[in-house]
Length: 152
Image 1 (tube, rainbow, N blue to C red):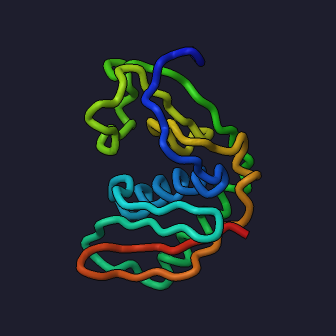
Image 2: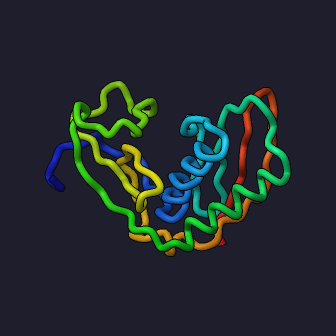
Image 3: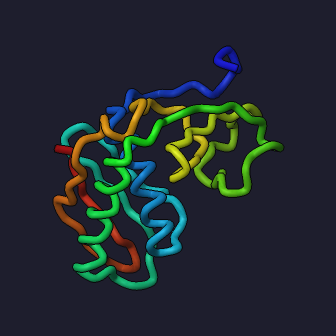
């Protein structure tokens, strides 16, 4: 299905940071029951990502996010792709970030059994290629929790 027609992609991500974004979204979902972030700025040097949360996470919870991220990265999970039509999406795939004009054929990115989402970006082949996840800073303001992270 590599020749399937998908939407065009207008940016070139740094694959380790972009893959870490997927893992971080799933970690937040598992820890806080929130959805995937709708506001992320992912770069090579540092990245920012935000989620609406009803309460401010504790310092211990923030440390736990970092710990869990590095634990998952160390599992050396494979990053694989599959192509499905919108009518055949697994129930756990959130389509909320898809553009209105997204094609009927979607590429799903699976990171082991940890995460799956529709995405046309670039990724590493295995999570061990990500490096160490480090939270530089975080803040909670007006119901929005933002993490600034880097990979070392």
